[in-house]
Image (cartoon, rainbow, N blue to C red; front, top):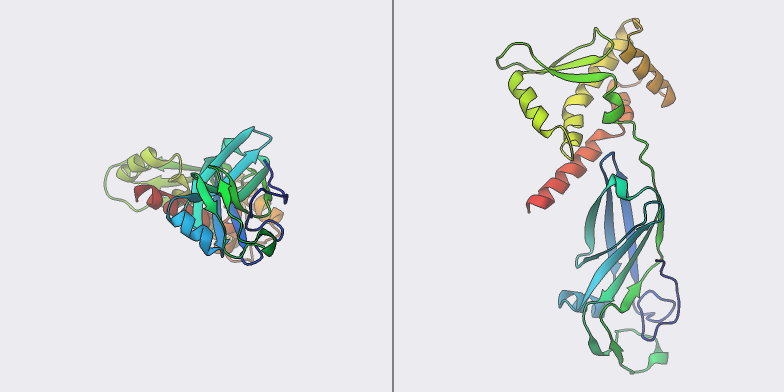
Length: 275
């Protein structure tokens, strides 16, 4: 589905000069990770008529998301000017088309919109449910799930339990082909329960990021022993156009593809679900 400028049987905000006295625009931000695609919508709607209709439940903002590669197609409706949708990563890939508009939710007899073109005069229109009342240019986005964060680091890093019981801080062992992150038995049991899904991205920022920083600092101070994790990290640093002289915090964040941003996004999503 792609909305184009055309002649509607009633004035549509954002369509040519149907309503020169009002504007309707949308912006989107797309965030991807191995499990999900998050699309944040921000709506600019200057039409008081439409805002009143939405407030009364007679119309809603709508976003149509369509992906030809996966045959995914869905219409999302919402009544706020800022809205987030979260989809599974396997639902969207490649080119994705997103269109935003305002649609009537029920019949509206004698419809007029403030600022409509003078050619409409004072003529009123009969609006049916699902009629489009505002539109803007659509978006073409490319969803790329090539990911360089937690999943790839998992090939050179393993989280294990301490051999003996007791309260212990997290520590790491850099002396083998894989970096070992060692948790107390109690912490490891908790980690096992929440390691998959959305919460994993928070673990990445709180566990993997500081451990990777420590490993990079070690590489910058010692001659590499050609352990596997050393080769992989050094190769990744070169691919990113960085060097061991750069800040270890910067390097680790770049390798993990800005883990804090995904952790904050995940935390926000969890908070929204609780509310």
